[in-house]
Length: 267
Ligand code: SF4
Ligand code: SF4
Ligand code: SF4
Image (cartoon, rainbow, N blue to C red; front, side, top):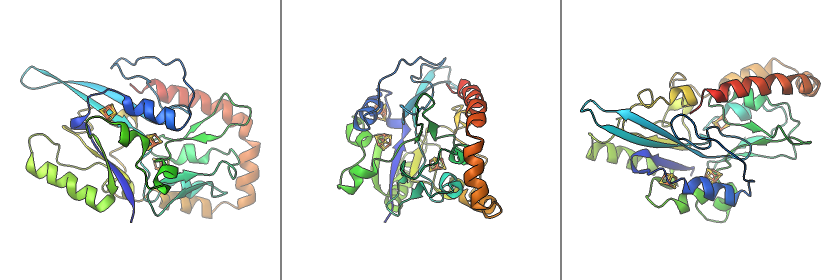
């Protein structure tokens, strides 16, 4: 069975304990970060930030203001685009749920960064031997029978870890029992062919302004790996590998500027 995490954003108080737990468990170094215009901090995911809480303030029809806090992290897609384009199999969807990365295999081509529709994989720009970094769904903890670090730390039960079918059942039970509290959709159930990160929200992702920061709603139900495999089947491996290495330096500079521009849109 495949594990997933249900993120019920209506329960989140924005304490960011999950951010700290993630950094602690993954031994990610501290870095100077800044607040966004919406008080999110850090304002981007990076090779040192696998999970961040996005803050949103919404004007309600009754004239009141409501706050919403949303964890942004890897979706752990059922058919991940990142893995579908990796020429050396450094990214892999495990049957248990996590999409894991083997840095021993990675050749640094960064095709995964371009392929991911959610803009999740990040590159260690400052490293002499740069690698890809992203949320691991704490696969090594799961292998020991433990829940992900963020889940065990959350004080409000926002993060629920379990078998994906059971979590979907629970999500729809919550929507059914409190229809005024929830937007009637589970983001990730079918998105991009389904994901192991599932979201419940109070209002739509569009109304939360999340579609412009990586929460895509234009992908439909199509598994994104289909596109990656179709593209890779037309490109000989040698061309992919050598090409990836040759364009490395040029791409590094170009992509760094593009990603900085993309990140400036986050908030
Ligand atoms: S969200 Fe992106 S990085 Fe994460 S599994 Fe899906 S395609 Fe890969
Ligand atoms: S599952 Fe693990 S790596 Fe992913 S956000 Fe939670 S603590 Fe971080
Ligand atoms: S630890 Fe839980 S309540 Fe606190 S920010 Fe993370 S998901 Fe929200």
